[in-house]
Image (cartoon, rainbow over all chains, first blue to last red; front, side, top):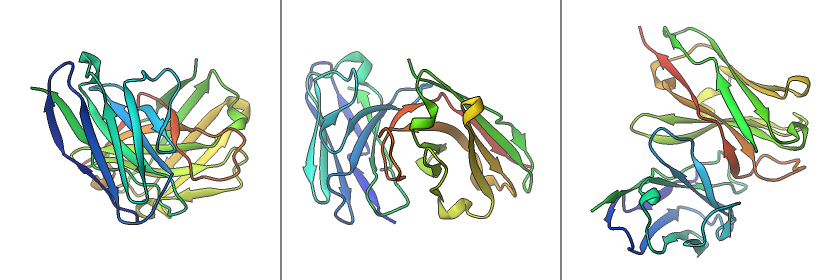
Length: 108
Length: 124
């Protein structure tokens, strides 16, 4: 199975900060990587797919980049609604389709 | 607006069975693959099973093969997950998720809409 390792596991930040989350895969999965946001008690929400394509109605402060085995999610100017858990997911030819362990973005 | 509504989760003893359902509205159900993903306490998200829009391709995570069966009913715009021989490790919140690519005949895909989830607890 493809293993996805997210770092950090927890990130403390303030409103207005720029934050970056990294997702590393143990094989080349480019460009088949997605990012999701999950707020407490809510369904996961698609943010980004195919490494850098924004999902429908996702604010432009979210961006994704990367290639090969290393990918990043960047949130510019963190907003109160952005304090949540973020997951990466690979959907390459390497089944099963796996998720990272999650990164919790909390208020500093 | 796309809405996915799961039901059927419950408390069940080890070895027991459950059938989860997911009703879809707001999109052409027949045009998209569908999946089940679970949120395991302390572990995160795990893909469980998926099938293409025509059910010609079906796949399962290794940990559920032979125990779970995914299916869909176009007439009812519904997705199902029959779960047999449940173990405590299957305890999770089970989500129904819509594949992101229209008309795809493959399973490798991201998930652009999710339901709220239905809880399954396996305990004696």
